Image 1: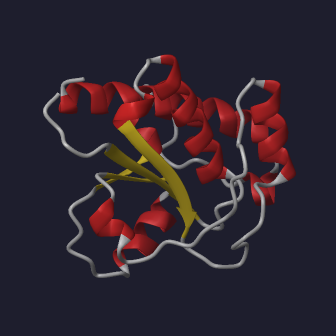
Image 2: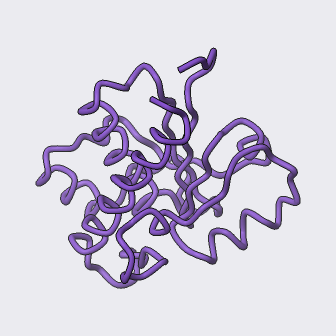
Image 3: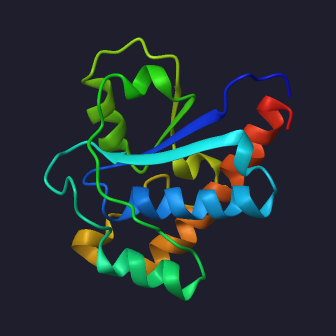
Length: 160
């Protein structure tokens, strides 16, 4: 790999307390297990500011803990226009997040995708928001499948 900067990955959902911090933690765990922690910079944000400063949802924390994954001291943050220029891969949880990102009218350099574009085919393309529906275990399974595929995609694309 001939990069001078880390590969920057940003996960985006609505409030940054359920899906995107879960994806951030799962992806960080996968990257660590692959021995690539020094190669990546990983973060998550929300498109709305309702939960800024809050810890991840208790359901997110519980499912991650059951699976041996830490969220450390994560606090919700809001997406800013500069994020679209800073991050290489901007990974949204659903189409509504993609639409919200598009409202920034940025010519950011980052690739924008939905996470489940990287999951095995035949499943949904949107990660459901467990804030409203519950189902944190199902969301964890979807996020894990998407993160595994995303890591493979980035490793192939970046030749690492």
